[in-house]
Image (spheres, rainbow, N blue to C red):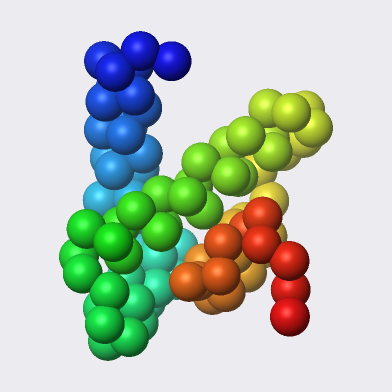
Length: 89
């Protein structure tokens, strides 16, 4: 993927996150940001972690040709900083 494509993707993911925070839908996005900041992550690091959850859910929807799973998405937000692809434990 070219640098400009990466930048566009990053911008789109940040737009999704900012919309979720602004509209408080789901409220867990804003809660995850606050929790991560309290755990010592910078604003940028926190948004990057949330972005990984957004990207992971989008990838899963496309790969598995399934509907968006809000419960799975919220569970992944609540599990941060553990990433969706990290093994539990």
